[in-house]
Image 1 (tube, helix red, strand yellow):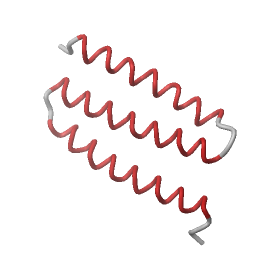
Image 2 (cartoon, helix red, strand yellow):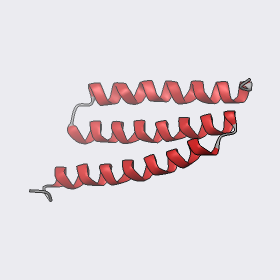
Image 3 (cartoon, helix red, strand yellow):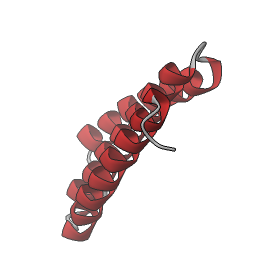
Length: 87
């Protein structure tokens, strides 16, 4: 059974994710939307780590590390494209 600490931590991550989705939908400019997606990716990584800690499974933490690396590379590619670096 998941302890209350993990439940409340997951609830906080979900509320932050909802706010991040609102930023992506309502963001006035493209860079604001990119920051919202990057924040959402970070929250997904946090949720995976919470899941791994709650169920005592290391595979979730390994997947979270790989996802974080891919998310970082994707954010760099989008930022470079917005700057005009990619053709």
